[in-house]
Length: 263
Image 1 (cartoon, rainbow, N blue to C red):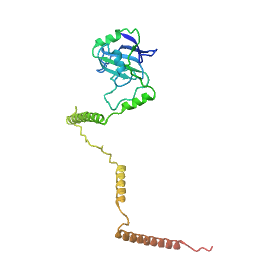
Image 2 (cartoon, rainbow, N blue to C red):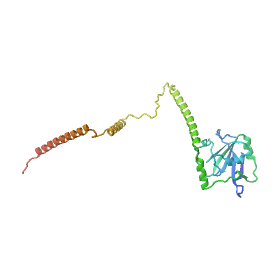
Image 3 (cartoon, helix red, strand yellow):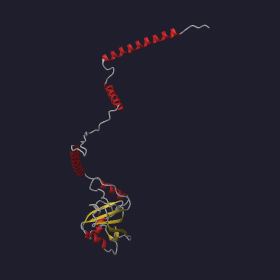
Image 4 (cartoon, one colour):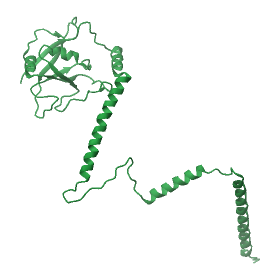
């Protein structure tokens, strides 16, 4: 398997250089984003090589052939690359050193990049390009996360149109599947709604009645009208009379139960 060690510099005046370890990406389970035969695998990618345009990695292989895509990942994988289609909602920066996948349009570019001999470190940073560090780096990352209102509205509308189209297609497929009997001849009947149905248990019904009672109590205005005040006074008098009669009966019962026992 072809592989290469590529020394690079990010500053022409630097006395030290960085090393990229490169080989051809070959896996059993390939996918369309990382096609076998056209994908280059890079190790030891530094943390400041994760800008959206991938200008440093593109500059490294620009003389080998036309590049179709560049993907950055935290760890090597044979699966699809992380989704970076959004211009307003970007993934957070990957911490530490990373791996990269450079996809060429033709295999000739891949072979040229692997067979190329680097006698001295290649400077891949554009002229007058200063790599931000510290507070400058954080400010740049924060500013890159912001986008204009028109751009954001356009992206949200595009996403919602695609989402509604997928939902309509899914509902259509579910309805078609529901109208067809299964292997045993049964047809599944389902109810679609905004809220799922609740279990009509005794505790659930009691809870509903209590809520309705609280709502009615809150709506009522006690002792607001004249007839309400009059009725409340009459009810209070009737309650006191009833209580007085009960107390009389209880005292009479206590008197009868009392007996004189001198010895």
